[in-house]
Length: 442
Image (cartoon, rainbow, N blue to C red; front, top):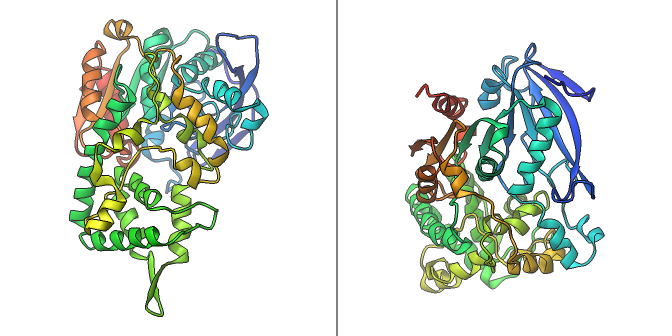
């Protein structure tokens, strides 16, 4: 089996980490054309340098792969990665456009040309291109040997595309909270999402009923005052609502509660927002580190010749209880939102403002290729297992279950034990169970 060429290698207790950058086609339909860099870290345990490969596909879109550290306690590596390196070499891939791969952001995109040229460039950063990147990398580092794919969230979307277009490269597939609908339009995705957001709000306020009044006071303050956060972001009532993105993780209720509890100060009888709250809100809301998430969040659902046309914004109008103006006028609980991107994001966030025209063009685009092949999936022969989180804020469990039934041989585990971050929060539990399921042991 071919080995990685000589590359920077770092050693710390429990892990050997080797860095590698691959030069790959921007457009896989033009393999001899422009190239981009895709960065990855190969991670193994001492003595595990010749174990089979597992590639990890991160959630997002737009986030780099996890950065391994040696601080897992007692000189050993924990969590799913610690379990995986007992049997695999793990490739932590910075998907194209993210982290140390050729970056995509407001600083680099203008070099592509005008907004239309930037949109054409970004059209090459969806799951189909990521999968074809993986195939070139796989053949370069392991020859004809298939590998195991572990997909978290959007990484599971990519894994489903992988099963559709390159199943020959796969030994097994493990998916965590990331089975997409094969044919739902973005409108359908968000029509299913807003009721889930409502249920998360109800559960959050049931746990922290005192936050009903607190969130309402903050929203009223933002309605009556223009607030600019330390990094230049405008904190509008809608932007404040989007802190509800936290509610989909295992510790999200507490993170949001502790953020809100220190939000307001009374100075001379007048309430204002505290500096500490505004600093934390800036960090939570900024897309500076992951702009692809904003510009491509709806296009990851696009196929079939229909534009996404700012689906989350349009569908939101069907759920008037999410209107902050209505909540403050009626003295009703403010409803936080979740994984939705809106045109106003490109006004409030300095990292996105230069990309508004590009985002509009992507929202209007209709020539998106298909991401999934239902016939190939129906004939699937790759061992596969998926965790479907029954109360997942980000990925609809009903859509996931429908897709599970359409992938031949896929073993489905539906659970309400974990939130969307079950792969991380369970230690090695979710990974271990899915691996055993895919191999027919459960």
